[in-house]
Length: 235
Image (tube, rainbow, N blue to C red; front, side, top):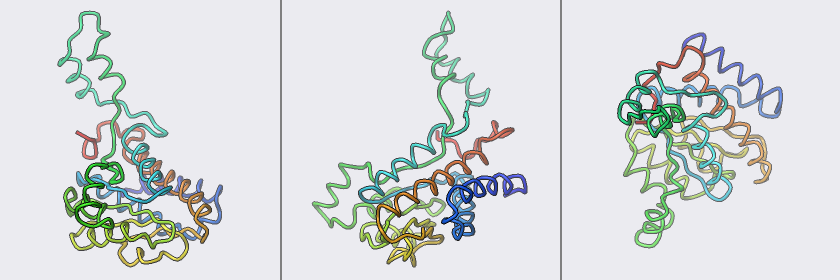
């Protein structure tokens, strides 16, 4: 990251720790997670996410923040706008081309493995229930991608096996867990272990943590003077 980008990330970290000082021990690991995921996005990679229960909802939540505008506007670059306008010319300038050009937003490449209902149920029924995320990841991901694996206890077997699959195939892993890290931690390149042991309390701290991560990625990529950035845009 450039010095300017480092300053942007530090600003978001400072805001997080002012509001949640209990998360201050995660400063280094959170910075490393942001740096890792930014490298993946800039390399045309994709961030995959998985978790169970409330953590499954968190995985979906993170995807929602990454693939459309979160805190900043993400207008299309001028060249992209012209493509949509020219593909759907309208005499009054208020048709489908204008809707697309004016309202589509640039997104960061992120995919939830939780949403593949048909695949997941087939894997659980035909192969092994604990392989639902591992199979999805293995069939989709490439070495320049990353997995965000969320487990409050760090003991979720299907999440651990997804992280093991990532490790075996050269995919970077960012874990989000409670204090212990559980069995997931050894398979993570970076593990964000919030200092709580009770599941609801862990989940309460995961939300500001990943909101900060998403906000930092968004501002580094789409902040002021970044509107020409192309390398992390979904096709």
